[in-house]
Length: 537
Image (cartoon, rainbow, N blue to C red):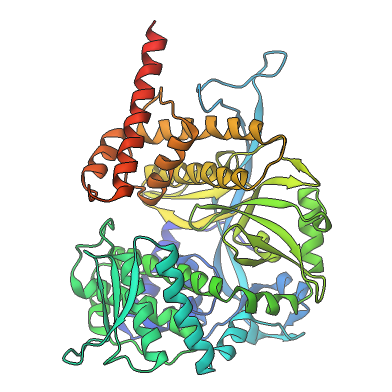
């Protein structure tokens, strides 16, 4: 039976385990656990690696039973941290006015939310500790496929093409530098990755160089707070991220920055932050790459019977997947918002989700990473009670100096924050992302009820921009608000009107995109001042 634990004692245990991994050459074991594909928090990864470094798939006792497997007699469970929650009743607040919402009798309205109260020690088991029904694994499926040089070449080419097409701030190209010994480099100044085809000759070599330099581009770009850390620190981070991704895909790789990694043991707080950043980037890279293999992954998931998951989600949402509803989803890992239409395979009639970026998601992602914000459209009807992301998330204090964004029902953003303000900015960014996503959805539909949702979304976006830019009377035309919103999502360090003006001054003034952004900001600022004058009159 699990009991509540003392956080001081747990932190001491975690630091001891982490220090032991650095000093006893076991650091690689932790990276291997991260590469196994499950989505545990950093602290739980450390705990799993310290107890069972060869773990490949970890689940609870009842979860294994639900999957048709049972824990073998005599097997010892792996300790992990499990948050405990309690329901608290809070008053509903009007976001725009800050006033308490009241019912028709003028009594304050309230709602019930989940709040983290502490942690208990839970027990999980690796698949090697269980027996029973064979569990299909998408990681094994992908690894087997990439053993073919043709498949790896196809993935490498698609990675470059998709990045160059969709990520305007980053370009990738191959060049031959026969007089150089490096396999490639990332230029922060030019925001480009160059693969040296004279050194990286095989597809596998090029792919390894690519993911190493891609890790640099995500960790150490010009807006990064850690871009000026020592070169050895940054190289160690990029190498760790590349190692995790390579391990996930079953590619031969090694870890050569062990000299610098060992210095992390001298500052465990720096080490924890560095590895958390590595964990985040490696997960995002794996998901980015898996998105390019969506059709193959779709085939894999269609081979697994998802009927039980489907029925559970349908019951929770009050919809039938047969009607092919469009769902708006909150990505609890990175705070972004997407929408996806339920579709059905003609081959085996299994359901899946096709996102607005044309990615394929298995429906069981709705029980893990994604949370349904709204059923945007179902049976020809647009959403009536539109729920905002701020309605389902809140900042929760985990321990002294540490916070999380908790999703309604107990889910976590899988990220921790050292300042409450950072967690609040995460929610602010998510809110703006929802407005942008709703606008994108509305631009694709000609539903007769669209104007109602457009006006509601425009009001929400104005309120969200006003909060971030600290301009309480901000008023923007929808198209101008959308332009500013995209810039804020891409640059979360902007936290005021002054910050935005400084950001504009730092952009290339000759680019058409800069000119358009400056013009839009001036119009938005002018509209706000006019609104203030109207209020004064």
